[in-house]
Length: 358
Image (cartoon, rainbow, N blue to C red):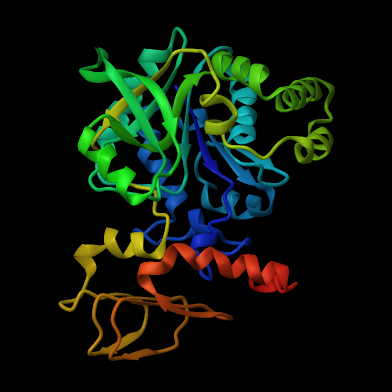
């Protein structure tokens, strides 16, 4: 199996700690290592290190090379982020050149998973399932009504692979409102969309050819450029011309190829906000429910997150459900329950021409 770790995102929901120069996947917000390293060590037992491709933004190439200096991974640099469809297409092109029609898993770099071995077993099952064709995705069994995730409607169980149940995927569903999410959870027919996909390189490149012709043409030019010795120049030329679109919208919602979903229970979180970090690290909370990462002094503070990347003392008095994120040049104070809205700050800063803070 070959594995593409998708690590080109900007992580705006973790501003101001996450910046364009150091996005979320390079922060150690869930443990002792950056999220991209946690993902690498999670998937490494599935295959040789040389079969792992890191798809990154070119701006982070030096950082990634330093992080993985002692590992035999392949690094693919995108000139700019174009979402997951071009990311996956680029990885599939390189894997196919190396290994032909090989099985490839596409895995986000910035997710948290509690049970690594259960995760690997699910990927092994998915890989065996699609070796002869089709596309598989891992669906997270919902634990609550959640409006921040897309959902997958599963059909009846078709078979079992490595003792893992397999269902036909009937529909991708957009992020619902709260009442709809409650109905989904109660029905037991819906799963959270994890964004983890498994297929052969031949299958995904064929589907890209059908539904994303501009991307397919760009990949064909890149393929020729590898033989002609002008890959970097062609990549810089064609990549900005392809549509920025997710693999979900670009291919999965349109394909007529068999698409399967494997329900999984390995403890998953997309670490999509500061509140998610607060909840994930519940065992690190103090007796009043606070999570402090840095130099903090709290008096009568409840259920709050203090995160500091400076040596400054953060003194907090009489607050509840607050987040305080302290960096060298930005201090963010806000309602922890509204942490999904943090992305509004980098958007406004760019509109104001203050990109130095983004």
